[in-house]
Image 1: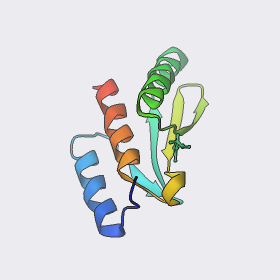
Image 2: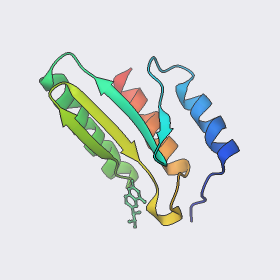
Image 3: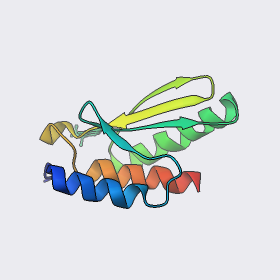
Image 4: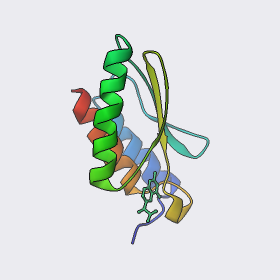
Amino acid sequence: MVNRLNQQQIDEALQNLNAEAEQPWRVQSAQLFKDFQFRDFRQAFGFISQLALLAEQQNHHPRWCNEYRKVEVSMTTHEVDGLSERDFKLAQAIETILS
Ligand code: HBI
């Protein structure tokens, strides 16, 4: 059972998530979204590999788009047709693999 977050909950969750991040996550087209830029393709692909393992662990699977050293990540929760705590939990975990 998962709940759809309302706007106030989304704003609070974004604030927590972005508190220590250099580049912020944002909500774009109803998705939780962030652009990542790496030193080179190898680093970008390493990040994607770690992201894939995290997604499996959490059974929550983001969309990603990679071009050379750039990776765009976005996600939503289909079950609630919006954002849920699952999106923010995965985003937080993604930040920890970068730190
Ligand atoms: N990944 N991003 C995302 N959103 C979901 O709603 C989602 C998912 N991965 C697995 C998943 N849902 C399953 O829990 C359901 O399809 C059963």
